[in-house]
Amino acid sequence: MHFKLPWRNLWRNPRRTLIIMAAVIIGVWSMVFLSALMRGMSENMFENGISILTGDLQIHQKGYRSDPVIENSMSNPGEVKRVLAETLPEGARWASRIRVNAIAQNARHSAGITFVGVDPDKEKYVSFIKPAAVSEGKYLSEGDQRRILVGKALLEKFETRIGHKIVIMAQDTNGEIASKAFRIGGVFRSELSSTEKQYVFVSKDAAKELLRLSSGISEFAVLLEDHKRVDQIAGRIAEKLPEGYEVHTWKDLLPMMKAWTAMIDGFNLIWYVVVFIAMGFGIINTLLMAVYERMREFGMLKALGMKPVWIIRNVLCESFYILFLGIVIGDIIGLLSLAPLFQSGLDLSAMAVGAEMAGLSRVIFPSLNPNDMILANTVVLFSGLLVTLYPAVEAARITPVEAMMKT
Amino acid sequence: MKIVESINVSKTYQQGKVAVNALKNVNLTIEKGEFMALAGPSGSGKTTLLNLIGGLDLPGEGKIIVNGNDYSKMNPSQLAELRLFKIGFVFQAYNLIPVLSAVENVEYVMLLQGAPEKERKEKAERILDEVGLGDKYSRRPNELSGGQQQRVAVARAIVSNPAIVLADEPTANLDSKTGDGLLTLMKKINEKKQVTFIFSTHDRMVMEYAARMVHIRDGQVAEDTKK
Ligand SMILES: Nc1ncnc2c1ncn2[C@@H]1O[C@H](COP(=O)(O)OP(=O)(O)OP(=O)(O)O)[C@@H](O)[C@H]1O
Ligand SMILES: [Mg+2]
Image (cartoon, rainbow over all chains, first blue to last red; front, top):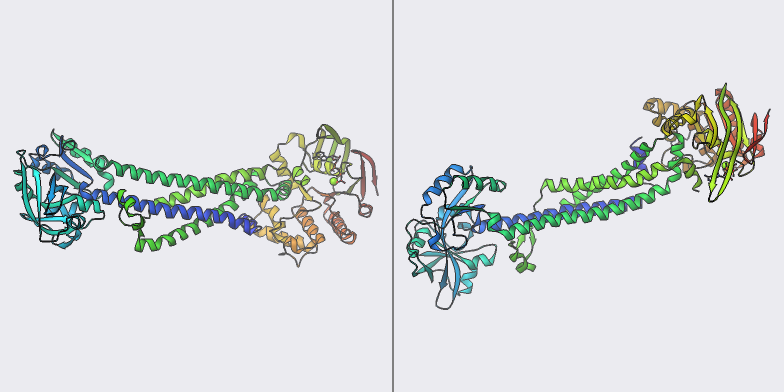
């Protein structure tokens, strides 16, 4: 009967109970839905960010980051490779690149681009530039001398086609301007058209030849299986490397993205607070009303010898039922409303420019983290019970004599 | 055996700036098994006295001793405990919990007393049989007449064999025939179980049932007659 009485009391005024419950449902639903969407965005942004060559961490010659010219490349990449082999955990992949700013040119157009020489067989495990990204033509192969991969957007901008030539001009190791004509061997796609316009890829051998480089490497990029360990692993690598190198994690390399993810977390938090406040006031108000209506009854119960804690317990129990049901229903509606988005994603192409600036894909898939849901549920349950204490204590404080005077 | 003692009890209420002497120097002794009526005009202090005897309020001066317990030496939680186990209450109205059935209303006090479930149900049903509601166990208060509701309240008040039952105008909301029925029932229980009943009333007819009648006027005992 301890549990029966509060349950029946709920349905004395079903409309009021349903209104509070609706507030809880909407609160929980919005928390589950938005946090999954926000987390989806945040993860998408992160994956896009690190897949565009950044990786989890990078190693450069000291000075390369402030002046990324070919003179600042690493002359002894062998010692870096040795350290990587010793320190990287299982499942981690790395690739080395030659990377310079250059000018691409054909008969009609020219544009500043980033010219990247890669080891195709290693690169495909580390960044987005892999066979699957090539929509026309073929991916690079080891030692390709004349073929170049360009982005779809650049291809369109240059009004050219696969098989046609494109000339790359860059400063070589001797400080001379070197140039070479490559044949467009493949066209790659990326989530972001800015990436398609910025990068062109050749094999490392081809890059070395153009830049008159013997063994130099511009950067090493490492992709980890467990992104959370990046700081620890970066630290370990930095410790083992001799003087003259710099290790940077994605947080240093993509400061904007770090800010974005922090902002998304902040947004979630703000939303939690908004829900808490709106719901909290709703609960306090309606429960106070419910409690004041029943003051005579509480007074009668106290006259019979009911202790104040029992009354508090009963009111808390009523509130618990509402919160619990509201949370369960809110979770279910949250999951149901996310279900279609897990399948097809949320199409952001209507605001593609804004989304792309933020480094987001055109279609975002929500990401449901059980911890987010547990957090949302706990926040609602405990804040709900907390605010219920006020009406509950009010009910427990009435004396029988006071209650009898209320007619 | 004295079950209630009121020694020099006074109670003053503050109504705004005016002090109202609801009770003045009330001395009263009630023996176990009495069936006693408090009579008197409206505002004379009947409810105030019953509240003091029931430990719902504390006197300004004087002492209340019920079943050997001096209220002035007890804290609120001990008073609540005493009410729970030793005092039955029947109010004029709003006696019952509207969402509980008749039998559940009776059971609820036993639940508060910590009685085991099986015992609760058996006793509650037996006591409802005694007050003539054997066929209405599962009716909710709003499905019972006023008289039947008061019978449930009486059943609840006596179910755990209290030392005293306090009833403040239990018949005020009932027509005279139903009121008679309720008083007859209370009298019967009083005789059969030796439960002490103290009730207040304006109603001459109701006073007829009382074996002892205490008239209160202006907060003082004006007359105390035994039949
Ligand atoms: N809580 C209170 N605060 C202020 N004054 C009160 C309070 N309770 C009672 N009084 C006053 O004390 C006096 C006695 O009231 P009480 O309720 O005991 O009378 P009563 O005999 O029960 O009257 P009735 O027959 O109308 O129920 C009245 O003047 C009343 O106004
Ligand atoms: Mg009265």
